[in-house]
Length: 70
Image (tube, rainbow, N blue to C red):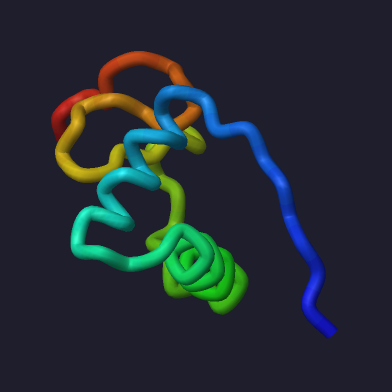
């Protein structure tokens, strides 16, 4: 049975969502896929202190500022 999830993305989440939907993928499909990948462990381990950068934007998703170069 499907349920509806509502969330209020911050600026970083909005940037990530923009990247995930830039090819025409629907928001529902992008969020569903990201949740499933994370639950399966398909998302790389967080060796970045819990911060993740999307789309080369150079900003951490948690709003913690620029992601340091590795």
